[in-house]
Amino acid sequence: MVNLTSNRLTRRCVLQGIAAGMVANGFATGGAIAASKIPFGVAVHLDPFRQEPRFRNLLKKHADLIVPMNALKWASLRYDRDKFDFTGADEIIDFALQHGKSIHGHALLWYHANPKWLDAIRSARELERLLAQHIEQVAGRYEGKIATWDVVNEVVAHDPLTQGKWRRGIWYDLLGPRHVELAFAAAARAAPSARLFINDYDLEDDSLRTEARQTAILQIVRRLQDKNIPIHGVGLQAHLYAERGIGRENLGKFVRSLDALGLEVAVTELDVIDWKLPADRDRRDRAVAATVREFLEALTSAGQPRNVTTWGLSDANSWVKETFPRQDSAIARPLPFDANWQPKPMFHEIKKFTG
Ligand code: G3I
Image (cartoon, rainbow, N blue to C red):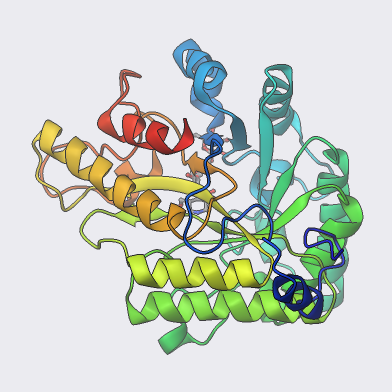
């Protein structure tokens, strides 16, 4: 029997498996909604985690999976070139282990949130060596604890139609497309038990730009598989814009293409950007919940995601507030709990899918 989840996954072996009528990686193919519970994940920002007992209580009660939001980024771990600081990451990971939660790691390579000294490097050889060492240290330290990793985050250009396929930044500029292969190969060596993901945003609507982004992800996945470099899944960040709508057919097609390649899908950073919605609180909360429902219905009708993770839990701590400020004086309400840690319609909507 072909093992569709093995670390030595090739395109040919996946196609053989599908021809033999197998179901890949727990996806219910053929449009069926799988009956089992989808784990609910929460990304944890260190400040409220340390300061807010209500946050920790809600995590204990509701989260199946925990993601350190920033603590595993280069900027947090590698402020100084010569020493790693695992303090914040360990705090969150110890909490997760103590309370029986799974852990998703974010992220081993990103063009953003890097220490200044890293962005100043000009030698490809030096950068390649640093990348391998970093992944060996970080993924190796948490081997057996972190179940899934965003090995690379946002490596596709914002708009491949006008900018070319790849995201510009230190990794691409010095190492070229190879940076993705180097990262996945290093992660597979350092954390052989972990499931390895490529993570990106704007994969959920039906614009031509989104289609181009989906195509770029599929090309990257195929290239890794052709080279026998393990990749197990794609993370849909799902920073949803309430005004955009969900590209139901497009999303379904993308998820089925990934399924055919033997890959899982996870929802990794769900929240709803509500800057264009009416200010009225109840109307806004209902529209945010409806956006989440539309997305999760479209997704689960194509296959069961590995988990659904929100990028934070309470509106009190969200990047959306600053990055997408509203024209009026209303405060963003992108997450499942309000600023007083009370559940909103979005939470109840997610629970319908995650049980
Ligand atoms: O490191 C300092 C810390 O020393 C200080 O105490 C603190 C005071 O607020 O600021 C700290 O750094 C901030 C860091 O978050 C941790 O709080 C950075 O200035 C701030 O830029 C950083 O923002 C994060 C951003 O990624 C960049 O890393 C956001 O919280 C986080 O939500 C955002 O997450 C990204 C995902 O990783 C990838 N996808 C998009 C998503 C939203 O931008």
